Image (cartoon, rainbow, N blue to C red; front, side, top):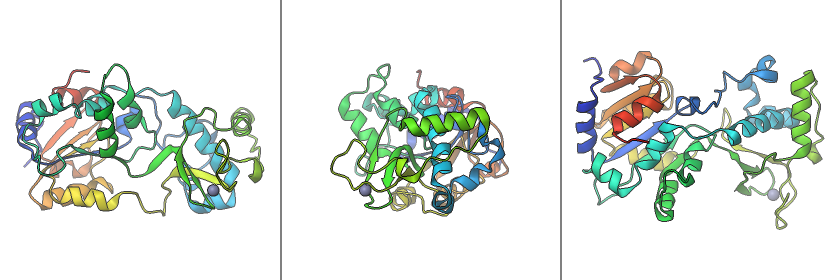
Amino acid sequence: MAPSSDMETFGKVLASSKSLAILAGAGLSAASGIPTYRGAGGLWRTHDAMSLATPEAFEDNPSLVWKFYHERREKAITALPNAAHKALASLYLPMTLSRVAPSLDPSECPNPLFITQNVDSLSLRVLSESSLNLPEAIQAIARESLLEMHGSLFRLRCTECERDYRDYSSPLSEILAEATERHSESGEDVEVPVDKLPRCGDGHPDSCGGLLRPGVVWFGEVPEHLDQISNKLDHCDLLLIVGTSSTVYPAAGFADIVKGKGGKTAVFNLERSSGDRRADFLFIGPCEETLPQALGIAV
Ligand SMILES: [Zn+2]
């Protein structure tokens, strides 16, 4: 059966859901101006961006990989959350949740689990946005329900002592900012010596001084929170797939789990993909428009 794009029917299914999960991908942040890996432009056009996002690339040339991430980090820090981020964040307000999805089972964690593949942390930053007015306690619940399965550009991990922390400073490092800018202007691969790259302890006196790496999950590494995700998906009866093709891992695998247990899936994406015909609902268009509308949340 072809997927339905009827908002009213979707609203009824959402209202009867007992366990809800959301999976977001790059399309969620497109309207915020965050380019995808493949869309990375500028000085990185001559590099295969995928080849920079590996542990081996970092070992070979940490300076080049850091410049790549420094630029992405600076882009993400100036980006603003869009209406789709806001609509999803609003779901955590008890008043909104009890209107939109009143049947969620209070005996288990009633809040939707929000899994994102994005590393821009916009779904986290939006929680404290003043226009949303989310009380501190609600922000804490929403933060706990948000799983950044591919890590974050704003996390730093020490390659020596495993220290892992968040840092939103901009720029992260003057030397790195300068080298990235020169690289961008002249195409010259200005190498930052490894002892001048971000180090464990910069601003944190109790740390070891080891080389820091971006706290993102690279190709060949295992995504984070997989246990928690599979526990929830095991009894999830409605999965919203936002801004990502439902044919590619992990969306395809997550949809299989939910469908296998008799649950339903709803895809919100800019374009069709071949696996969409297995979805129960399909809303084609910019998710910052379709999502607030389907959830009945004005932002
Ligand atoms: Zn360390």
